[in-house]
Structure formats: C-alpha cells, structure tokens
Image (cartoon, rainbow, N blue to C red):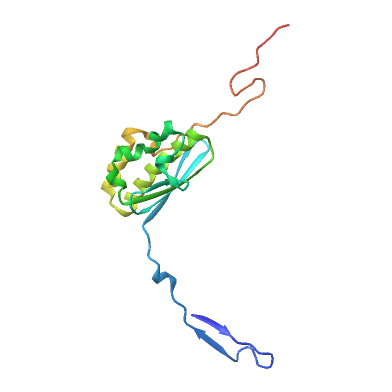
Length: 171
C-alpha cells in the first residue's frame, strides 16, 4: 500500500494520512521458464535467450533461415540438426550477436544455441537429458560448448607482423 500525506500550510505535518490499496504486480505476473547464455568466437559475442515457446529461433530479430552468409547457414543450424528438431519444438531462442566478422558471428551463434539448449534442460528438464545432450554435442564438435581460446597475436617491432621479421642485410 502507498501512504499519501496531505499537507496544508496551517496544519502540522503529521495531521492527515490516507492509505491507498495497490495491486501486487508480482502475484499477477506469470514466471516464464528462461535461460540466458553466451557464445563467443574471437571478438564476436552472441547472447541467447531461451524460453518456453513454439520452436522459433531468431537472430537479431529475423529468422535463422535468413542468416547471411548463405554458405555458412548450415553451420548455424548444426546444433538443431545434431540434436533433432523435436528437442527445439517447445523452445523459443532469441539471439543478439555483435562484434567480429561474419564467420566469427556464425560460430558464436551456433555455440550460443548449443549452450542454450543444454542450460535449459539442466534448469527445467532433468539432469540425465542434459548429460545426454552435452555428450552428443561434445562428440560432434567440442567448440559447440567450449569456447576456442585462440586470439590474434599482437604485432612486435622489427618486423611487419607478429612473427615475421624484416629481411636482414649486411650492406
């Protein structure tokens, strides 16, 4: 409830108080089953938000079927193809991806999808199904669940790149 104080210049501050009833917002809201996970590749980061739904997967607001470049579209589909469409039938996944290049973003998206389904099963289904999904994904490609630690090596002096040196000349 909210307490409203009515003040007038000739009355003391404690004189009048009216209590108004307020509807509880927590009681009226339904709690949706959802998980949020991240997939990373180089500097690309994909944030996946998985919740109960109809099997829809969207990347930056558009369906995953329209993802560009077209040649790498199957890479983004891999977690769905490996685990089967029925695992994703009651799950909506929204993905926001930024940073990196086109290829790194695709790899970040596929990691985010794989991590999202495993996290959802761990939290809301059961441990045995989570372990089964995890084992299937790890057997196919470890990078679906474990991020790749390789990064670009910084350039050093005395050469044009990280490792190559300028040609040595004696005269």
